Image (cartoon, rainbow, N blue to C red; front, side, top):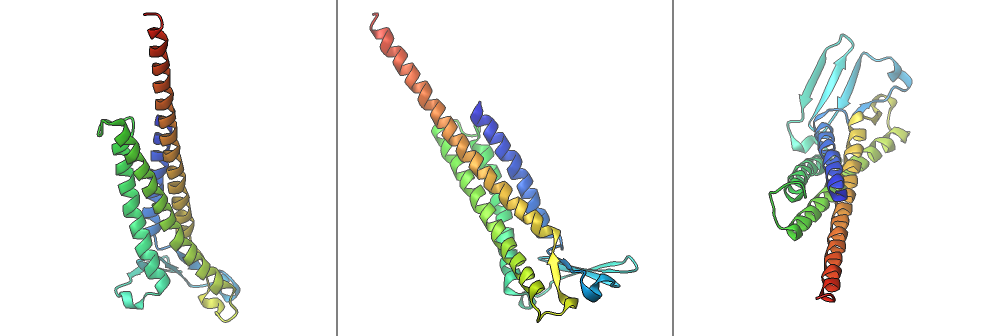
Length: 210
C-alpha cells in the first residue's frame, strides 16, 4: 500500500512539473524590464522568452514577434531552447513509463519487470529535472551578471521573469518525483522480501508437525 501512495504522489508531482515545463518553454517571460533609474516611468515594456519577445505599449497594445533566425540568438538562449524542449519530451516519456510500470496498473504483469520500469521512470524524472534546472540557472545567472554590471546601461537591464521561477519549480518537482519513485521501489522490494521470509518460515514450522 505504501508503494502505491508514493507512486501516485510522484505521478501527481510529475504531471504538475510537466505543466510547469510547458509554461516555461512557451511563455515569453524569461526576461522582464528592470524598473530602475529612468525605467521607472516608461511608455513600453519588453518581455523576452525562448521563442519570441513581446512589447507592451502604454496604450495597452501588445505586439509579439517570434525569433525567425537561429543566427540572431545568443548561445545561452539556444542552449535554453534545446534543454527545455528536451526536458519536456523526457518528462512526458517518464510519465508514460511510470504509469506503465505502476503497481496499480496491469500494463505489465511481472512484478520484477514493474520494478525495473518504475526505476527507469525515476531515472527519466531525475534527468528531466536536471535538464530543466541547468538552462534556468544559466539564464538567470546571465541576467544577474548584466544587471550588476556597470558597463550595461540601465535602459537595457533586465530582471528575472516568472518563467524562470516556474522552470525552477518544474525541475524541483521532477527531482522530488524521482526520489519518491525510487522510495516506492525500495518499499515494494522490502515488502516482497518480508512476505517471502514469512511464508518460508511458516512452511518450515509446519514441516515439524507432519
